[in-house]
Length: 197
Ligand SMILES: Nc1nc2c(ncn2[C@@H]2O[C@H](COP(=O)(O)OP(=O)(O)OP(=O)(O)O)[C@@H](O)[C@H]2O)c(=O)[nH]1
Ligand SMILES: [Zn+2]
Image (cartoon, rainbow, N blue to C red; front, side, top):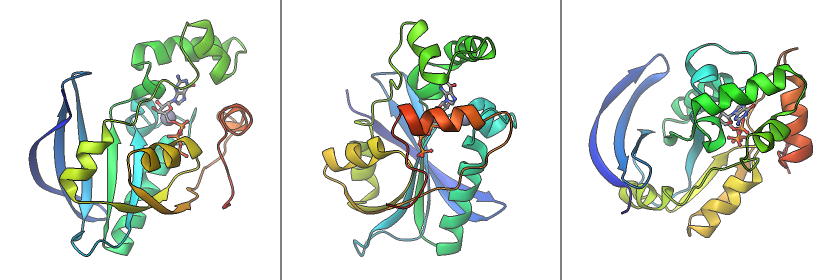
């Protein structure tokens, strides 16, 4: 069964007023949200961010990753533009879930990198599936985007869904002593691009 739209409401934030659209995903039993600002009727590319849930970084102020910063940066950029969409996908831990991410962090505390830790737990390096986005884009009437990401897999996934990515906009990453290795591994093993190209 496909992802299905359920309801929308206003969501005021410190950067401005968004609309929040809720979707249910019967295949995974997850609930996803999209925050939008502005009108998409004219078909112009929509400034967009596909954000994967990170409870520790988005809500608990963790310095182990850069997710919280990227979330804030993306919402601020959309508000400044007055038009855009932030897809908040419940793909915690690159799709392995929160408790498995804690197990992966424990292995990283003992020296593994983020990819090795996933593999030792019997998972692929990145278990995310972006096909759920198709019905969400269709519901919102978005066919073309300027995508804020450093992850080439997201660009490919949208192209596969028939969404035009007019340009990839690199998204700020904030390095600190706790996430340096994590950022290095993303560049070396997961293909993340940390400069515009
Ligand atoms: N399994 C696992 N997941 C992690 C780890 N650190 C962060 N995550 C998850 O990774 C996801 C974010 O993915 P990232 O690789 O940081 O970035 P991205 O979304 O692929 O790419 P950008 O669009 O450039 O941010 C979130 O779901 C986090 O919960 C880790 O050490 N292990
Ligand atoms: Zn994170």
